[in-house]
Amino acid sequence: MTASPLVVTLDGAHPGREVEAFLREVRPFGVLLFARHLLSPSQVRELCACVREALPNSPPERILDQEGGPVNRLAALGARYPGAEDLRGDPRRAEALAFEMGEHLRDLGFSGDFAPVVDLGPALPGTGLSGRLFGEDPEVVTSCAGAFLQGLRRACVWGCLKHFPGLGGSRVNSHRELPRIPGSPREREAHLLPYRRLRGKAAAVMVAHAAVEAFGEDRPTSLNPLVYSALRDLGFEGVRITDDLSMGALKAWGTLEGKIEAALAAGADAAIAVAPEEEIRRAAERLQDGSPWREAAGRLESLRGGRMP
Image (cartoon, rainbow, N blue to C red):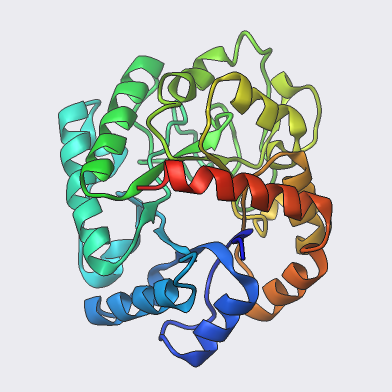
């Protein structure tokens, strides 16, 4: 059976029959782990092996949100890595850092990393982007992000550009509320440059939650068909993944189930849903017979083999 178009997380941190049963029921494209799941290297290896072996014919991707700097999940295991801002626009250091982190991830059993960030600076206070950006110049950001992707690829870990179509210029944190980003399509063109230049190098792109004026409406970008069409127009052929649909930016947009369906109908190939396992079970059961779910699962199946290392 094909994977479902979901990236989910786990209630607990230990492998076992409960984890296997949940994964076999939901069949997610990916499992996203957090610092709370990282108790020791041996425990993480066992958990990732459990995720992989639960569905041997279509093993879920094992993913961490590991950028370095402020977003450094591996700190739970005592690892310290600098962030994008610390690299000062140096592509060679970006590649070396990504390779080092990628080897660490691969050793633990991860297959994918939700990084690098290609939003353009400056990172305004309160946005949650401080320390996470390569700079303000789109050429510098593109060069460093491309090097970062290459470092991950050398370690046999796939990377994901984020947050399309760009959170540069936002004034609030999308984990808490919906950013509203002004600017005409021409004024926002620079924010698309990294995606245009790196479209053949990234396995995935994460779509942000923001109301972007250049896309003509207040509808969040993650639920907006125009945004997914723009990715196709840029020539991106990888996996299009929403940011976490449980974030505060989407609190006014209905139930988690409804947001999953809306995102898939808009053109997402996979939706991140950070929620209790029981809630994910119910959503998957209710949505799996609908056309948005089936069409997204079909796209995901065709993309996965060619885009994931």
